[in-house]
Image (cartoon, rainbow, N blue to C red; front, side):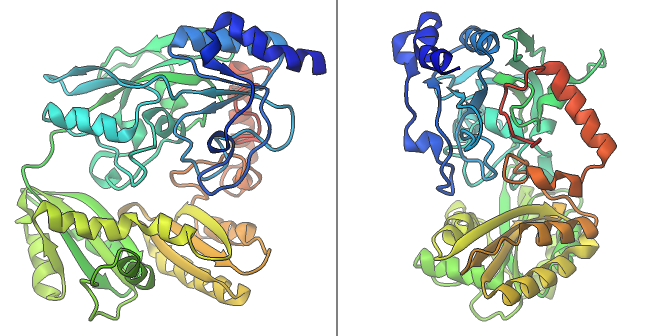
Length: 450
């Protein structure tokens, strides 16, 4: 095997150009967003098209060498960096498969390379009078291929759905190098298995996505952002549900615990717009086309402390306090444990209370922010010691009828806990799908399944 491994860079240079192959990876390629180091690589490749990806996978299949797929590398579950254990993989970077290849301004559809950032997709869509439905704080580095891999949600799921709901077609390469192009752009197509839907959320374990075709949405003529204090998460979820009505739509419903909200104002050197409130959480709502409906009017009337922002500059300042949360928690001293979970609306306060109790018992700090309309919370735990609270917290989520991963994926960090959400029969079915499409288990080894 040693001889084979030493030959890999040269063999790859025969099917690609020399500037597309490197023998070592940079720290930005091996370390994840949290700074956790990955393992060694056999080589790094930068293909520019599906046929080049095909050549790499054919060679990997022939040699029995695993392949780690990487795009924006903004993942938080160890799914996009080389594994620390096992055989060193070929690191297949999609950073040169970028750019919007086509946009149809009449039907509102767009085709982009898998390495295209969400920000670029959004900008091109806006230039043609459309909006892309997925938005998230990491938009400048997260890519459309990566969000397909995790079926990312973001802040506008309540309006447009998750990534799977946007995707109309994919170009992808199977583990044996076969290129499949399924990008017809049809809104209705009931001809056999939904391969596109299957690949959304598969975390690179079934194929390498190279191009994505998505549908676009018409943006609202006007948007209003509201920030208001609430006592609990169940109350926040109920308010977000009542904030839509005739003539306008709910575009986003986010929540931040009061302490984290205040910390964000200090970090950004801004006055707290809700400084005089003492409630436990801040609810951030965005409504489209003026917010003139009864639901929003009642919120403003019944809660005079509500901050209402209609100008883009005002709205952006409120959103910055939400979007800075991930960075804020990553800078605190101690061991950071991040969780991306969802529970039924009725169990939100119970989860928050149990999280606080766990944090106090371990002598740490915790915070909560997330997408309240979907019951999706991003829980942050910073602990002074080496205790790992993962199984205890995720077991609690399972007992409450929730999911251990709402939008970040399972990756390698959460793979040992997948049985908390999936039954043995479901796990066997997923393994059978993996075995069928990737019989050697070469694509993203260790992701989803241990």
